Image 1 (cartoon, rainbow, N blue to C red):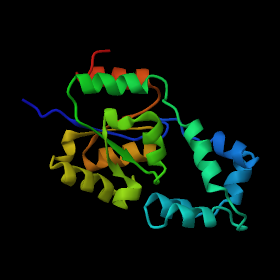
Image 2 (tube, one colour):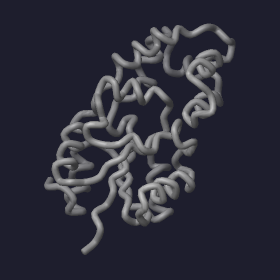
Image 3 (cartoon, helix red, strand yellow):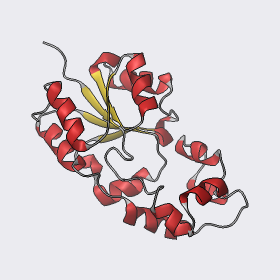
Image 4 (spheres, one colour):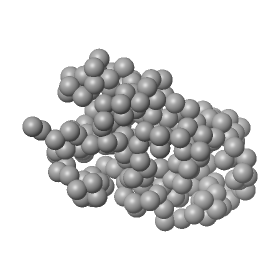
Length: 198
């Protein structure tokens, strides 16, 4: 009998709405294009990989060094985080079916705000968040470290992610992977794999 896959979920825009596209530009009174041009171009990656603290990140947030109110930004993020349509039910159904699930996300310590608001830990473990592991998808090392930590073959892992580059890299390394278009489409893919009913 084949081993049940361990399900590795991306978080942002797979399970939880990403505030970067609407809430953060509105918070700073900018368009998304203006915000993208104004922010420091490398500090986000360092923050996601856990190399710098939130205080250091906010001090370098803008190229011109203007201050950022961290408490107000945290409140903005907490307000903006919400479930992607159908995602919580999908997690609940996988949990009811007995599947082991882990977050596998390129994200910063802000994942704690998500947890505080939405309590994803009711369904999965925050095992592979880049700020904790220092590894980001689509690096092969990220997939390898996840499989080694779980003590499973890479082929026994199923990645569910909304970014093509991450899904392609996972498949190249030997994982099964689903590219997210919607929760209903993911459910259909899981049904095709006989993991969940449609």
